[in-house]
Length: 76
Image 1 (tube, rainbow, N blue to C red):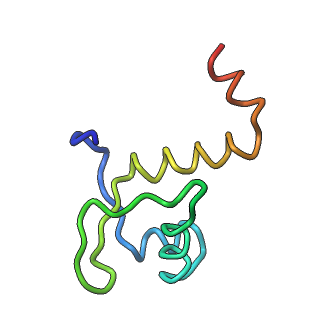
Image 2: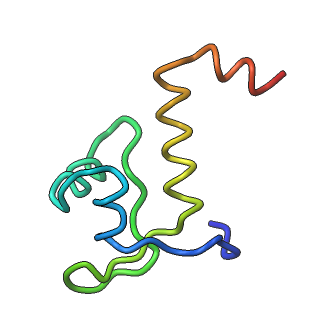
């Protein structure tokens, strides 16, 4: 885990970014395939903090999983 991160997003910011509820985020975290990253810091309510790098990497992994041709283009 890289400790030098761009910053952190709160649960509220994550929900706004993906237009979803907290429950959706927690369901995504429990998925077997491409689970949503766990927060780097946890507290009660919306005080969980996710590393921006982790979330952006998850987004990229999801895009590549849905468009495998991008993985070969990225490797080139």
